Picture 1 (cartoon, rainbow, N blue to C red):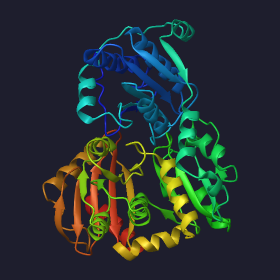
Picture 2 (picture 1 turned 45 degrees about the horizontal axis):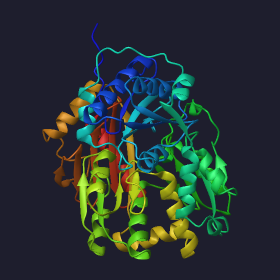
Picture 3 (picture 1 turned 135 degrees about the vertical axis):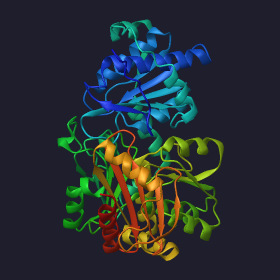
Picture 4 (picture 1 turned 45 degrees about the vertical axis):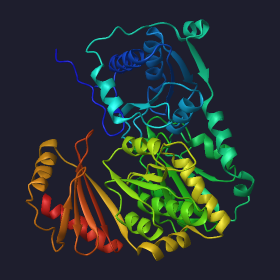
Length: 467
């Protein structure tokens, strides 16, 4: 029988539960991690947590049993936790590694396995590759009772949620925020951030803040098409001025303004650069993934801040943050890290920063976006995820690489980049990009125009050209 080779994608290993994502395969990954840690040093400690997905506790306990059997001390979160909670705990508890059982924003049938380094962010790409090489084809899955591991001291339960809440209370003035004239709505998308806002901002309007491993069948990705209820709530409730959404493991952000309009991650990155540099007088490099708007480069030129562009995957940004002074690091998908916090994406922390800015400046989210437009000009971005067979997906990418597409409808381009996917810089000042998903039969199609109508037209032209 052919053994399934386990590969980590842009952010961890993800697979369909009961198909490739099984107790046995999770144990294989845990055994590879144990071999890697024990090959580096003796006496290792690993923090393990899981989000709200189906089987989270079972897969977290499987990982714990395998690591304990290899002599590794395990600090296990009780109940669901967010990815930033685990990352922070690895740093604060001086652990050697963290494991989060999560498939982040993926559809309900998936679960996954993320690795977190001692710096409080994603494990570096080179180290993940080393772990992958050590994942065995076969493994003996230990069945030691968790109670036995607890009594031996090999495993301890840790309260990561309280640690994270205490940290946020040190970094934000919640007395001020709870008196804010701008009322906040929060959509947890049935994910692991649901307790945090409830406890810190008791007057917030809460959506989907209950434990539902099926997410009502909706992938917990904080993009406009998945958040229609939050949008309608914002538009229909005059006192609500900011709508915050986070994904399944609460490391990604989505925002809505007071009219129920989606504020995408490109805008959020620009808002955070503007806040930290202009309002807080902070400096540093800006690190962005290849799929982020070039308007970031325009703002950084205006503010004299250096910019670096990385392949897609937050692990590349986090690696830069551990080595250099970074002001903001961000991806198109809503994962953004900021100076003064851990080198990790954190949707709740980012949302609180913008809520804090609104409260202190007396400006609505729309007015703050206007501040950004004054520097970089107005723009509109959208993305299509085309579910197509892998063969078609691969042939489109091959065509793009071979220069088959001379133009897209009436949209001509002046240069092409291919750091990670193929990005066409259009003559109208916008851009479009084609990129194949590494984990699903999906082709991601990105577009930016000068208005909502133009962006929709670019997306339609791309589909006509490639399909």
